Image 1: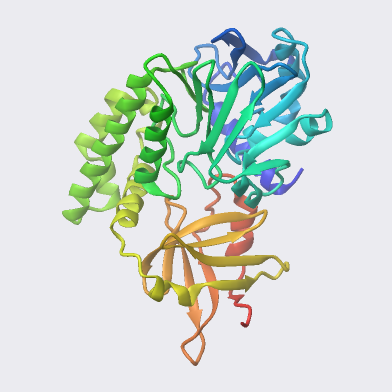
Image 2: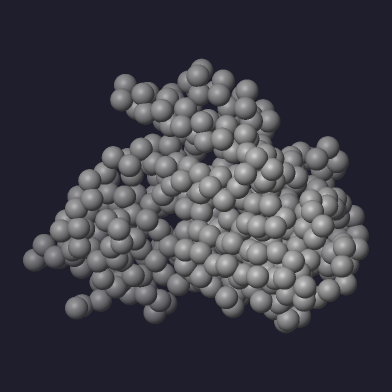
Length: 400
């Protein structure tokens, strides 16, 4: 097991431990199966006895096999497959990873060995230790006989996040682009990108569509009105942050603003736990505001593009796409870079702020870059990459 995987699992179960009734042993795993249509089911992994902390797994029975949406941890795969056999004895034919989180991908290799085809967005390969086979860019359509699957990039949560729609069953797996307990991480394209993903789900849906929330949700599914409400909550929140920002209010002060706290308290059931510190949500909103307001200038940004050598012989590619500057390294990370000041770019939309600084040589040409990361910054499952990057004084640019 890699250090990266170990840290993530420890962090995940530390969060779960706030509930007294977490079941740690495999034979104590609590599943709840909900039938949503003739051939579509949701298996909910319960982490407590009151149904407050749950993960939803999609199970759709096709003509020749079963399609899964997310798979949880490899150590729980045997128990999950036993639960699936209560629905059907058909083999696992396809597995869709909604994003690169370990609890959605860790069982990939084991299922691949059993004959399943692993399906994901192409950007998932920039996260370490994922095993996939069928990758796509913006959209994938797949016919499994009993249903037609439409998977597409959601632009929320992470670079590789997708929503998965089963047309005949009329169910939309939102994964981490929607959770009903808390305002989820907006992702590299800010709240505007996340709202774009929510609206794209509504375009494929109707009043009868069942929207399946992702991790740490209390509902098996919600209806269209809940997605519309979430869009309005996000717009209201960002609008309030923008007003306070224009008044030169600090992130700490914005986090205790009465209007913001009331918004979260009334609408999100996890407020008693997560509402103690809203700085991360505020920082994410500020990131999205800055991203929306920035003026794209390819002539200004092109000087930063190129390849940069890591000491472990991996390459960081810095490139322009649609007026935005990106940095990616296979098996490690994929970031959108937003300019804070000349030569310094923010990435990661998280708290504390993460930045990259491009370094110039005596001829005022870009010769390298450095990652500026706070000590102990290890959020969002890329801990090993971040720790490694923090320790490199200068990452040199490859001479053109």
